[in-house]
Image (cartoon, rainbow, N blue to C red; front, side, top):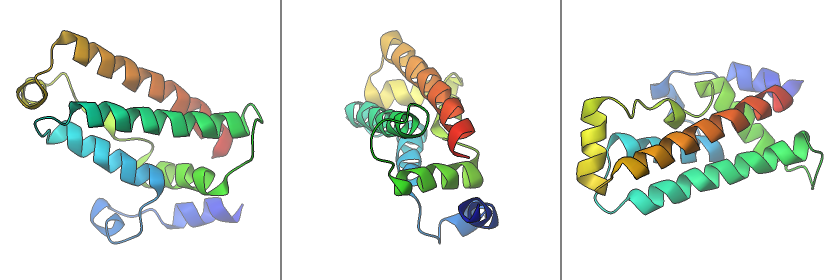
Length: 139
């Protein structure tokens, strides 16, 4: 289909990608990745809110195309296609949280304990499962 060809044609390096208009999922992925890689004090709640939003929107795409529920929103589908074409999926789910320097930054900025890390790992895993299903339906 023409959108798939367009998505494949728009594959760019990261520096070139930044000059293009990012899709909804790409912008949210960037925001979450930045929160993990460069955490700011007090940003923990926003991080989890953003991850929940990403997950809920991806679930909506899954319901629209796999479960055939609700109105199909083409902009969400094309945003998924673009995220796949440019990044292979959400990058924040591949952020190396268990690296000591990353973990220390999150603890220092967010005052996290083991429960917070467990919650993040669980959210990342849940999101990867939804991404896997959506990717096979939409792409």
